[in-house]
Length: 329
Image 1 (cartoon, rainbow, N blue to C red):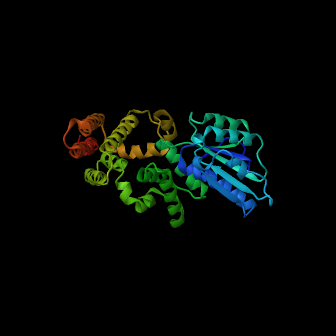
Image 2: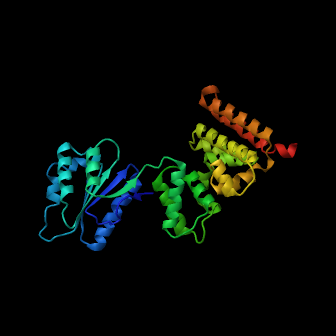
Image 3: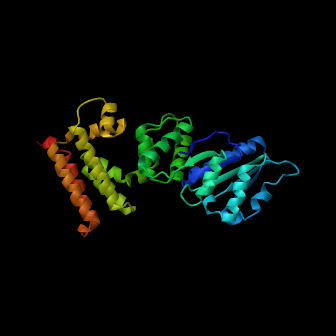
C-alpha cells in the first residue's frame, strides 16, 4: 500500500509519488485530483508524459490565470524528463504557483535522481509506491484493502485470495471490491473459494495443502488442473517443499502458543494453526521421505526428467502417503 512520508495535505503545492507500482501511483494521482475537485469542481487536470512536457510547457501551464482557476498538473515518468525540462521543474519547485498542485511520478531509481532530490529538498509531500514483490507485502495489501472498506476478512481468506489471484495488485483490489459488494458479514476462506474456485484450484499451494493433508486424489486433481492452466511446474515443487518443511519445523518445535511458535518459526499464527491440523498423520520418517520426493521432483522439472508432470504426480502421491505414515505404523 502507498505510504506517506511527509505531510498529508493532498492540496500541497507539490506531491511526489515515488515507486513502480502502477496501481499505487494511479491512486496517488486520483487522491490529489479528488481533493482538488472537492475544493473546486471546475479544477483543470493536465496529465502529461515526458514527451508532452517540453521546455517552457510547465511555465505555460502554471502561469497566472485571469480566473484564478485551480489546476492539477500530473507529470508521469518524471525520471525521463529532458535536462532542459528538469531545469524548468526545479525552478518551479522554488516558487510554486497558488491554486496549482504539481504531481510528479518518479520511478525512484538513480535515473533522474537530481529532480527527486530537488523535490524532496523543496518540501514536497511524498507518497511511496514501491513494487510489491514479496508475498507478505501482497498479503498486507489485501488486508489493508479490506480494512479500508470497513469490512473484516479472516487471515485465511486473505491468504486464499493472494494464492488464487497472484501478484497483480489491480486484480487483487478488484477481487476485494467484488467480495465486499457481494458478501455480507465476515469474509472467510470458504467465500473466497466459491468466488475464485477455478483459480484457487490452479494454485500451487492448493496442490501442496491437499498433498500434506494426505488427500492424494484431490491433490492430483488440483495438480492436473494447475498444469493445464499454465502454472509453472517449478512453482508447484516450491509449494510442496514449503508445505513439507512447515510440517517438519512445527513437529520438531517446542510446544507453546501459536504466537510464540510464530515468532520462533517465522510463520504467521494462523498458519501455525493450519499446519498443526495438517501434521496429525506425520512422523519424522514420513517428513524425510517427503523431502526426498520433493527433491526428486525438483530435479525432474528442472531438466532431470522427460516428463515434469509425471515427476510431480510421483511426488504428490509420495507426500500424501507420508502424511498417513503414523496411521500405518
